[in-house]
Amino acid sequence: MARRRPRIERAPRISRRTAALTALGAASLALFSVLVPIQTVLYGTSLPLSFILGAALCAAPLLSLRHPRWAVAMFCAAAFTLPLLVVPTLATEAPWPWSVPALLTFVLLVGVVTFIHGARAGVFPLAIGALLSLTAPLLRPEIVATPETAGSVTADLIVTTSLAAAMFLVAVLVAGRVRVSAELTREREHSALEESRRALVEERTRIARELHDVIAHSMSVIQVQASTARYRLPEIGDAASVEFDSIAATARTSLTEMRRMLGVLRTEDQTAELAPQQGIDDIPALVDTIRRAGVTVGLEIAGAVADAPQAVQIAAFRIAQEALSNAVRHASGAAVTVRVQADADIVRVRVRNSPAATPTTSIGGGYGLRGMRERIEVLGGSFTASPTADGGWEVAASLPLHESPSTPPIAPITQETP
Image (spheres, rainbow, N blue to C red):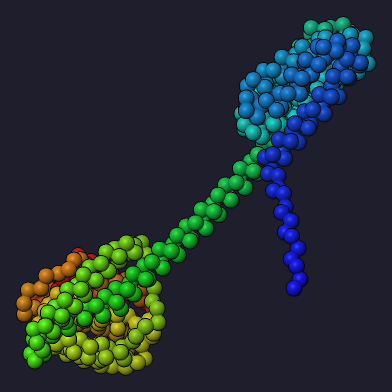
């Protein structure tokens, strides 16, 4: 058997922040190592002063990352002092008042402050540095005594100010681009999070609706069959009656727990989704199940119901199923009538029960009428659920066979007790 090669762990990649900080430190160190000997040899500044003032200049870009005000103050103090500590005869032969390393350090400081702290903060080192450089010719007039040296100093000031201003503009543009990219990244992450949340909420809503429509309906039938067994089957003994009563109590408890679970899964901001389930042709079998529980149910199906779209078929079955479950739970002993009428453009479902023969205690507000309302909203139909004049309850739904340009209003539902 071939041996596996040992897995080589790759070193973690350096982050952009670390790389940028390393590059800035390397640039500052390189400028310092060049500025000190140039200032000492070409300008005649003493080595200790060149070392101290050069360190202040080159450390300012690094210090500006956390303390921009202190960095600008330290840089301006060194930039003001350093051009004054030169030998006049040497200064006329090299760029003055800004040497090349000092110029590059000035440009680097303006760029770092502008990029990290914004355009308003970057204006201060640019303006203060440019103004301080104008004071050097005033304090050392012997260096600009001739037209040649005056022209050289003017050119040095113009080049330094132009490069610093160009760096300021580049830093502003790059910082803006980085901010926009970061905002777009945050928006994409937020959109992806909202999309995943919406998908999760919709799935929970669908699961809650199907649990209510299928499992709760079956549990209701079990509870009714167990509760009425002693009346429908007089030949059973007392022990069996006690067992049936226990089954009915367990079914009622399970329904209560299921409603609590549905309260967790249910949401108010999602529309219903339809899954491939039973259709209108399955309503007779549903009615037979209810009849076996001892409920009197009349059924009438008219029209070409088989030609209805699948979505309408599913909705009609679920409406009939939920309305029958409500009648069984809340109107014990009442007769129920189910009518399904298919016309040319619409399918009408009407479930009506007579007044309850005996008062029935409700096990709590449910989600059945809300689920029916959701289904009809999807199809653009109309829905009503209200008590009748004789004390019964009626559920009526109209399901269009074709999509309509406008959705008819849905009657508000405030209760689920027929």
